[in-house]
Image 1 (cartoon, rainbow, N blue to C red):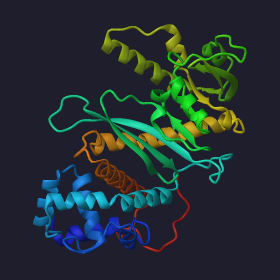
Image 2: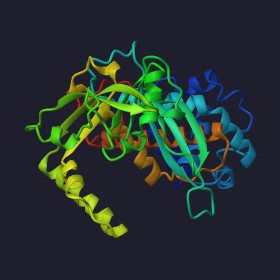
Image 3: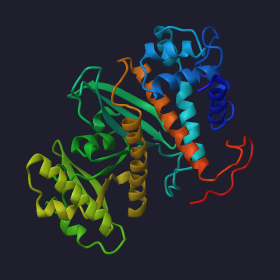
Length: 374
């Protein structure tokens, strides 16, 4: 592709970025001086060349030189990636917010509660055949700000206990985080958890201490109506109150879940119990007492938001090779993640733009968008 055509295509991408994105590079410290990297435009192209294209630092530096983009070494590019973290973070948050994909969460006043998602991914180094590290990270909604990240070895398990919690935090997690000690940790720090229940590893009790059978409660669900039940659980000898919220899956969704369980069992040479298959017909989520002002539907809506962002993470892992960290520097890794996230968001924005054909081939800057077509 000729340089002129590359520049033209890049200008289309740049129009999808928020207003003032170039000035933001200087105010966040990503572009302190123009030596080697002449502008924010060049810096972002270098960032995508390295992080979004899956190239090594050496390869990215070499291609930048060959394309006449910038003359810098792999070490210099590494330093630029380190200082670019706040800028890339802000760009990703802005593009995400402009895409308006966050649903309205009634009953969740932003000034009172921080919504946060915890997740983890396996990370390996070049030449490894297994998991060398695990990257634990927390994203804040709706800004997608990464406010916590930790790299552990392969034995570092997923747990809420790793996450620093402030009073009022609402932390969303999948079944990997459904551990009694972890949920108790959030409650003790003044926060609240919404977590997909793992019935096999997270025993629940009635308020009087009797063992609770989730399946017997699920059978009372009718149609698409959600319900909630007061429950409690024990951690380190102490009882903690919670609420179990659930809804019955559609027939097709339940069938897909059962087929997935059976397929996994066949691979391992195991069988699936009738109880496990029946539980697959429901979605049940545990919510801690600070969320008692929400209806069961709102609690499940919160978990649905977590799942939507998980789809973005999966795209990062599959399409942008997030599972192979280029180095072990925490700041550089976070910057690398933000660059990949920004690339995915821009690709999605391009997809949205393509749904309404424009004969001129690019979005018009400054025009008010029409109502979204679903």
